[in-house]
Image 1 (cartoon, rainbow, N blue to C red):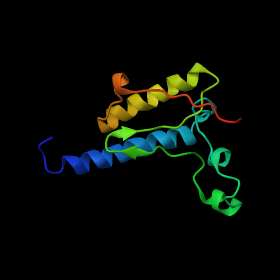
Image 2 (tube, one colour; image 1 turned 180 degrees about the vertical axis):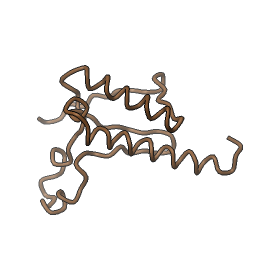
Image 3 (cartoon, rainbow, N blue to C red; image 1 turned 90 degrees about the horizontal axis):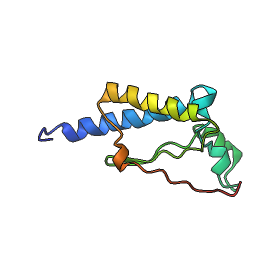
Length: 113
């Protein structure tokens, strides 16, 4: 704070942090990968297959200011949660951005399937 470039620096680090977290989930081992929600599972049937094939494999994390939402499936094992925690810790070391557990929430939404 106080530095004229701090907003830009934070925005770039936040985008990097969110993108790398999402990339780790999409491209990781079976344990962490099970958190990903594929676009194919949530896309409306009216969207053409050609358009769906152009999308990234999983839902990306929407972000606003310093808030980020990671849509994820509930994992079958606790190992996925441990691996996600390790990824977040590693990214904290790289970017300096930390997830504040006291400000984090888990919202479970039951879908039709």
